[in-house]
Image (cartoon, rainbow, N blue to C red; front, side, top):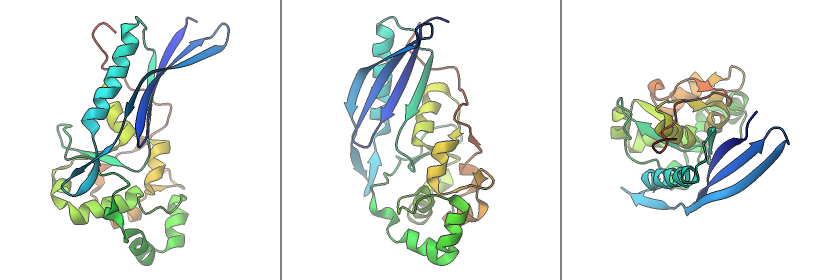
Length: 226
């Protein structure tokens, strides 16, 4: 098997980087190096703290260009980001607004309301994850209550890494392990929990079945000739 090159896009709340891993199967060696690093910051839009997706996408593509400029053929790309935050898309796949950050205060008090109405133990029995006030469950409730006009325009929602995967491949998916950060996945059925989703108020059309982590999506939208 020939030498393989894999790109890892690592996005954090304050910075991001594009890493290149080179693997030589015969010698079983792995070399990892940083190709591109950039900052990530919030912007205030209509009173909400939002992520600048256009800037982040531009930086990701710049990192991929740097790899291709070295004459390297990319075998695969993986994207890792924080959880819980999501992007709304319309029927044409165009973004609806900007994603509000988990750092925004819009979900204040909603976790307590969910516990009072559904029961803390019952929520945990269904989702099995940590109670955090910014989980997607509460973010969707905040969206429905505070920005209903966006809900009416949206046909899909994607978590942040799935959004960039969509931008690079044209394929929409919810990756399973990241989907579990939403507090909306039922751990017994490995599918969306209808009662939790109903409490959020978000229409079921926004989510689709989560795919296993090993799922592949092609083709990649890379610089010409790659």
